[in-house]
Length: 266
Length: 248
Image (cartoon, rainbow over the protein chains, first blue to last red):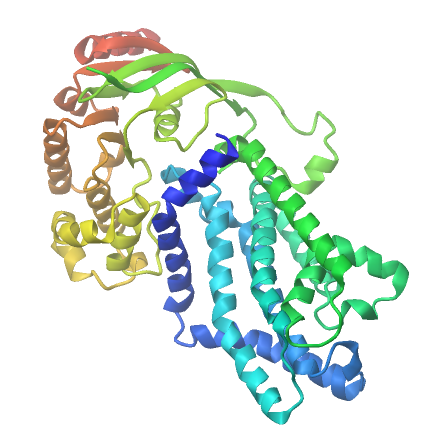
């Protein structure tokens, strides 16, 4: 099947895709009434920790932009989408083996639905950001600008990147079981390689260029652009677009190549 | 009549070794001897056509590829050789409770599974009562309990009920009727007979001669991955039995 027909088929099946997304969210919130609270509590707690550590203990509120708390929050909310999505898409096929074996749907759907479900959780967590933005606006410490329009662009780019990464990881994990552990370690390293707690321009020069290969650097730049007046690091944004497109292509190709073998294994 | 299922030179190859999943260590040190890379053809050169409304029984000893063939027709396995063309929707009764989630209630599960197989919400609303009725009063009483609290019999009954309510014109049945008590089995048989009378196409895998002759008119006999016979069910059964007695 060509990519065009695959996409068309997925579009036909959008109601099924939506059913799966709702199912994911429902399972997540079926067991705990505090479900929604957990989605926002985690990044909020992390933001509080980093804020205390860097702004008070190290007294380095200048490693990001000011207000540092907003700077952290944007990065951490996006990072939560990244880590949740990567961890779950790596297991996308294995964890739903029974379903994959019993329904004849384009198999990409199992990856897609996770990225979408985690994306919806991300969107649902945004009110926290809005709340704190209002607080800092009132205090006069935050000045929004027109580049806020880059925010949805960053969200789209992040979505595409996560789909690509998921398509790459899901079949590999199904075939090689310990990929999961490797992914977990890489994610932990990735957190510090991504400008979540610091800004790109704080990285010393020979290394700053290396940041371009990490699409999350450019994506966080886009997400933050509207909140801070600092100039946009265009190089990292261009890098993000290129790496995202390459990742998606690699993901689609890998998935198509390994699909047959994966179906025999699960 | 037109063919709704057509396979041409169908073949699929599996790894022989029982340990199929590789660990990273094994991938890195693939010393050749440490891992048996041998493969075998679970099915090969299967060419057949099934017309609309036909009831086909699939028989053969364990491990001859019956389920594998069914899965390829259902589209949940991809052949390594040849092709399968299925021109109508398929309702697979292969892993009945595959789409069900333990944490959700039976009610939510019905909507999700039927939705996954392409039924719209309105259509499910309409059939909801029929589905629950068929699954029995025990299931009705427990509609809002999490699915994992169901007994395995109840789970299978609900699964069968949901899948056979779908509109798909091709039914694939893989020995699912082995479970469930006698009364429910009889109910399932009646439902299958009814679906056949509506003109659906049936593919039945079974070791039970009575089931096969009750529903099927045509028999396919698979022997170590090859199509050994294709003809009227009684003749194929006779050949299968002759082979079997000969082997003993």
